[in-house]
Image 1 (cartoon, one colour):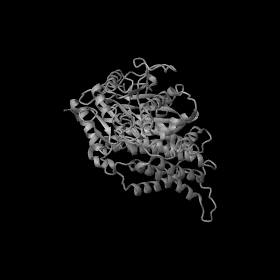
Image 2 (image 1 turned 135 degrees about the vertical axis):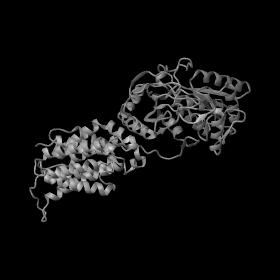
Image 3 (image 1 turned 90 degrees about the horizontal axis):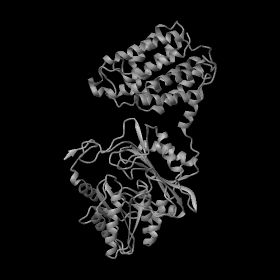
Length: 593
């Protein structure tokens, strides 16, 4: 047995048998093994008088194909070795196990081995009096030119079948379940295939069971657009893309390809498919932009699915499949089914609310509105955001030494929200503590909300406590306002209060390798220079904070998650102390003398 870079050790020669047996054990309520074959058949099959829908393909693509066997979807699935077609014998035995006397529909992706072996099995079934029909899935737009209307599929020329086969199998299974005859089931499946298009992208290759090296690789920092699920070359290589950029590529490569059927409804079934290593949260981020783009194009996503449907072992990547719906396809797609990997219950589809408030969009809009008109608190927070964002990777690296590496990401996210909140609320004369204090209190709450985690809470407390001191200093007992300016003495008072709030909330003390080790020398230096101009005093205090942040490399973590790592953090500055020093430095650069 060998262990692959992808994970568990496997016996390559028994991998197919082992995983199929495990699947049948885990989902015995739904499927059972086909006797003497590498296949599974649904507990509901065979059913006398019902067309049997038999699908199949190689291992390595779960939940395709065995995971899609169950009432309302496929009746059986024949499984080949890794990335290889099942043999004609395996297809034949699996189809015989599912046959209920009304004929067999064979459906699978358009690959040479599958075409030949399923074709041989169909001939043998026909020779024994079992009527068969075949529907090839050809949804991958990256693998060939568009189909010619009215022309028969040429397996050697036409497109590959990838994640769109889920739509074809679902429609075929629903048609068989409602009692359509073999011709009707084949017609519905072929119509689903004609209405389906898929485009995918990969960020990293995959490693087969028992292999010491990946089957194929994707160069670091790049994305392969149009790569196939077995490592077939893509259309082009591009740099690494953001989630929104990737969504745009996926949609752009499909929109011009989508057919316009007679009786079209404007609805489209949408499947954002993970190829094996991409996290669900990441896919949801991509789908957010996919949904926007499709709606902007006048299309209405109907019962969208985000998840793993056709994988490629541990390949990192996603694909987008779209099936254009008419009334019949909508009815069949909505029909209930119950399989190990996919379950659909009857009910009304609830579309995404187009009128919802998108806080991220609002924040982005406010951020782009930055300019010379920003009042002091907003301008200071904007400068802090800019400097911290420029050092995001380094802060993440420092945090990863003895933590989880998310400090840079979290603080940048929090400061972005703080800038937007301050910009929306700060109003008044420059230098008025009421205006700055109110903006900082709102910004602190926004930062804590957006950043999350311990650092988000501590930075939120720092801002809100500073703001509270400024607001209190401007108020007189009768409710009138004094004309006390935002001078060095006032900010020294605010720094003292912020220090107490952060220490109380975090339970830390100076010397325990936290942000307090930057904040404490800052507030002491600011207090010592209370009689000087704010800009000069602040910059001197920020320099003290920067020196102290560097000196935290000589400390051993004694508080928070890093404390559990003991001496591992020694020799590296604390990420929180460094980020606070950056923020204080940036704020000082916005102040006059």
